[in-house]
Length: 269
Image (cartoon, rainbow, N blue to C red; front, side, top):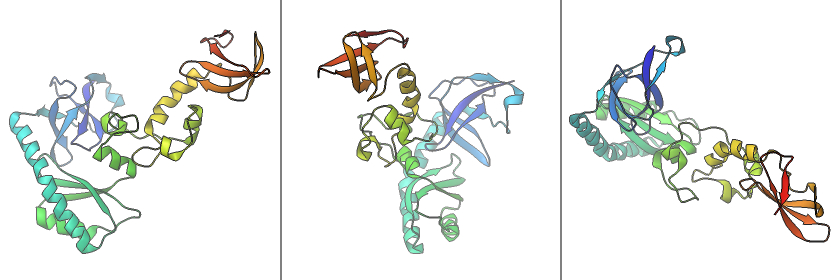
């Protein structure tokens, strides 16, 4: 049995489970961990938990130590070099006439590796660019092609709701989002209304979808004919969050029907 925590590597790295090695960590702590070749830094993003040996599907890397003041100084020093590193990379991209857009870059903690993130319409042959950068920085170079949603996650920003982008704040992974989810939530299908900064359907449509489906259980859909104590009416709108439906009666009057959690119970407001 292992005691593990989930750690987000670097600023834009993946989240993975690491053995605590008996080190007590809290959410938000910065730690130094094992990497494939050398050391990395990351942030603890989950509480400690126990997992069985059989549930470990790959070699479990471990936490080396909590970040010291010296480690934090090194991390900040690495961050300050990123702007110069990106400027150099962009210059080389132009020299090589590569059709790619550089988004961000990160140093590994021990400065043995630099990761560059970029977007491009097609696959890019960047082998010569890697050689150029390795020669300049004397470090292993890794170029990662990312999508527009990953770009938004890296750069951050604010959504139409006025809050920090979900992908940049707490989402651990991107799940498929479909137009059906917007329809289920009775939203306008205007692309400008349901798209995020990345131009794709907003992630919140996906993780709110199950809640709306549960709230809609036992409720009618727009266009349905519903019997009430005041007569039959056609559903003209539905509010899932309030569990209310607006009905238009045969005489033109509009009334609201409130639905209790049990579909068999309904009362007129």
